Length: 133
Image 1 (cartoon, rainbow, N blue to C red):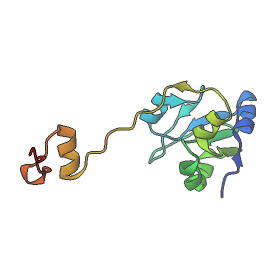
Image 2 (image 1 turned 180 degrees about the vertical axis):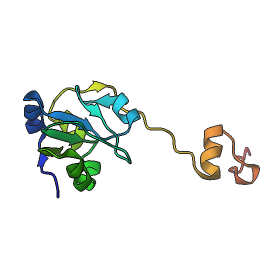
Image 3 (image 1 turned 30 degrees about the vertical axis):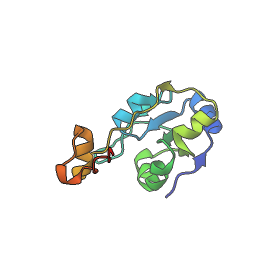
Image 4 (image 1 turned 45 degrees about the vertical axis):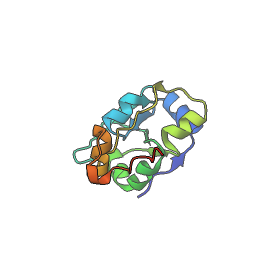
């Protein structure tokens, strides 16, 4: 079973009429930027919902909700929808958000990432010194 996708404007109308808005992103993403009134229920084992309906699910761009639509539909047990385009579409529609932009965490992998994070480079990997002649 799949969930129908709805526009940000339609989601806002449903929320104004009492629909529950569920943000399936992680707690850090939700804390950084969220749609007012959204309940944070991150995807994962043990995710549970207590709503009699209707529910509007959202993530950042709509991809996570679309990929997990079948699982979300089983959890919902009521009328449920996906906010097409996620919080990004919500913002493009000029609708309000709380918080600021989420700051991505730095990726540190491999010796280059670690060296960059520490501000050092192994001697055999340093660029040759410029010729001063």
